[in-house]
Length: 228
Image 1 (cartoon, rainbow, N blue to C red):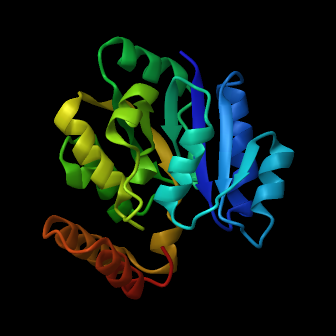
Image 2 (cartoon, helix red, strand yellow; image 1 turned 45 degrees about the horizontal axis):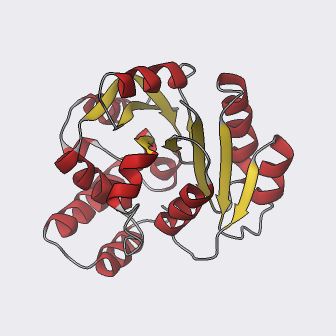
Image 3 (cartoon, rainbow, N blue to C red; image 1 turned 120 degrees about the vertical axis):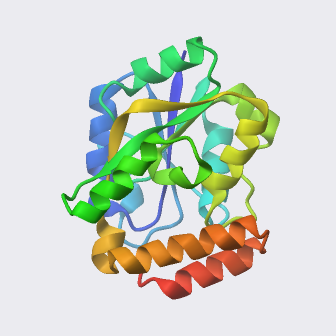
């Protein structure tokens, strides 16, 4: 099975070189696509120099970037990652086995690059199956066939695009949660606070489940945080 790793970026020059190097080390045969939203900080050039194929997104928004990357990917398996995540070293083997066992999509648990006790509680929760235990930071793998069947990410969602597609995946396919963790940056919590981020997340979830418009969810979430 051939892999395409798709990474949406905006102002990630401080992370992208490290991430592409890790992917090259752990999966030298994988295609690595960085879909950049015209970052002014040199993200695209840093990704190119690190060995990734760089695409410039024609539309803003992470869901649009992910779909654009998928449209240009050549792999049978699409693996979506955020730039501030470090992959598990054995991700190719783990995901390949999951697909062979009948899982057409799935994700990893995560742990933060911080030993803050409250963040360790958050990390522990990602081993459970509920939708509120999911998130884009956990990465997402999906077969090209299933991704095409679903029509990709819903580009109306500026945030929550990962939760929305996972809901649709679970209606038609088995969803795998790897018994290993990827490592996620704690920068959102360091820029804000644990409580502030938790309240913002809970608010976004509530609006999502109440079927508020994607525009309202994004506007409310952004207003509650210094950065996201």
